[in-house]
Amino acid sequence: MKNICYECYETGCITEKEIYDIAQFVTVKKYNVLYAEELPRFRKQPLKIYALPYDDQPDKTYNGTGRMGLDLGDKQRKELTDLQKHLSKKFLDDFYFADELMQTESTALQFVSLFEESDNFELIWVRNSGTNHAIPKGYQFIGYDISYPCDYSGSFSIICDCMFICRWHGCDEEGVLFMPEFSKLNDNGLFDDWKSAHDYMVKYLSEEWTERGEYCILEIFKKLDR
Image 1 (spheres, helix red, strand yellow):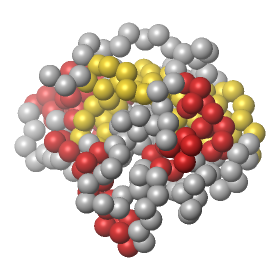
Image 2 (tube, helix red, strand yellow; image 1 turned 180 degrees about the vertical axis):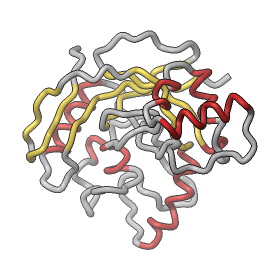
Image 3 (cartoon, helix red, strand yellow; image 1 turned 90 degrees about the vertical axis):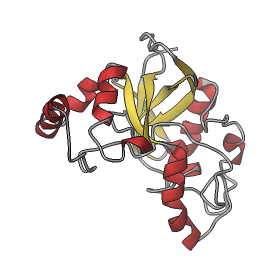
């Protein structure tokens, strides 16, 4: 498998892109929290298709990158330790500093601890498919996502936006176009194999209404339950 990403700015025209050497931790909102926050919006115009919010509890869970991770605008704790104050200042002064902290689990957790709602977030570890970066101890592969090249706060995912929590373009109103692909998603709302992820990306980008941009097929890893 090659270490490549893709770009598409015209319907169905997909080209290989300069390699993004992605391998890092990512902050993401816990799906049950995100689902509860988004449910009122979806209930205004309810659509019982794919896994869009409809019932009180989700029928299917999504554990990929498109879950609104911690960002510059999120409220930080009022009382910080000296170390947290140092990290906070560097983060506010240098947007890219957060990605430096995402290289190890311990420093990524220090970043999460800066924020008031830290309990609503979790870490995943991601790497671009085709790379062989060492997997952090205690983390297991849970599936493939297709998203923009991600940073510390995750990224736009065409799985999440089309079949779970729509924010940008959403999906076909009838909810049938991607049903074959939806049925292949595992319990984490991700694809088990690279080819299924790639085929879905190609089909998605062949539709005129879908989101254009740069995409990577990412391997997603989550910490084992203890």
